[in-house]
Image 1 (cartoon, rainbow, N blue to C red):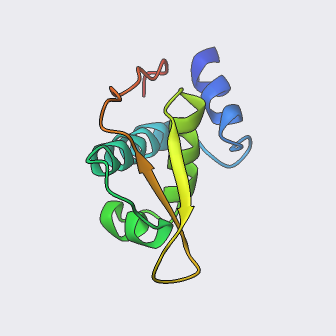
Image 2: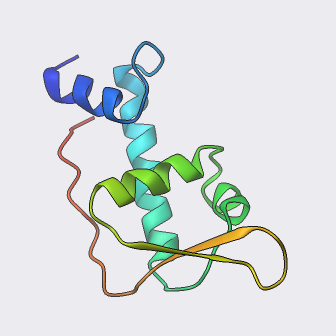
Image 3: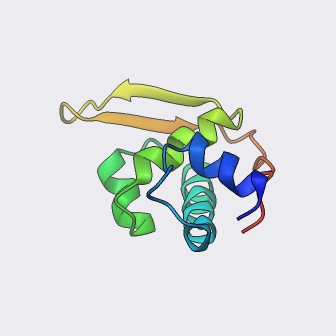
Amino acid sequence: MNHEQGRYIASIGGDGIIQRKDIAHLKAGVKEVFKIMSDGRWYTIRELRKAIDQEEAGRRMRELREAGINIEKRRSPFSRAWQYRILKSHQFPLLDVQA
């Protein structure tokens, strides 16, 4: 594992848990969350989990925030769940770690 990969794993709280082979899968999840949310619609964490087939959808969204993406948050008008959205004007950020 190189230094950049180690920093990436540490930045998402995966020291001792996540291995080099996991990075590609995690980054694919970040890209999928961004792709889904970039339509400007509101999504719950549950909807994102189902759409990307990863339990860690909330963490992938947090990675987008750390990369500079502004994610808005509100209470759902239909339930007590929180909803999130990305404004359509955002470009996908460059993630600096290679898998």
